[in-house]
Length: 287
Image (cartoon, rainbow, N blue to C red; front, side, top):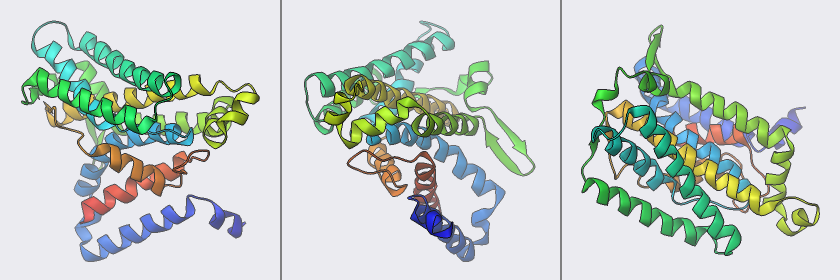
């Protein structure tokens, strides 16, 4: 039993996370204060949503470098519509999410149909999307502070207290994503397709797995969750900055790999990614 536990890819990250918590708490007891825990969770789960989708994509043998720019672009697009009086917040949210999904669709199409490596495709998309966000805003953030009392803002990132802990609704979106994507990867036929596509795509095709369709769907999922996380962040921080999300793509990939997902594809773990997310965010917060 113990040997099987140690052999799991999540065991190493779990030990590292526990050591981090002990060391930073020993250096500064306020590290585990309710205020610091609440602040850490608020930002961690936003980045974590992207990492969860990236786990499935990397398990299929691909990765997406455009998620950081999509994180910044999606809320910019939404708030440009809303602040300009072109449409209500609900419609702006839906349109922005659809555009984010289309970005993923374009990435997936270029990778699967034109056989261009995902590194090149998504790197190019990163530049295009970031440039578009800067062009729309002239480099200035969009204001979002009018959203505080809106029902959609409350659903996305409303906050409340559980004792001394400040909890944001985004934590529940993160937990839901962990449960759903963990179930999909480990308990469903789709999860088998994802792992087969990353492990040996030619053998997977020979067994009837729709490898290209699976990868396109995962690119769409990745961009959609990146855009969703960006909108949550914009409401929480009261600003939609076209430069937000810079560098997130590499941090997200690091979280996924630290958690035990194979960089070459074929093996992935949602629980490991959750540990990887907290390892990096706890390290950054502690330092």
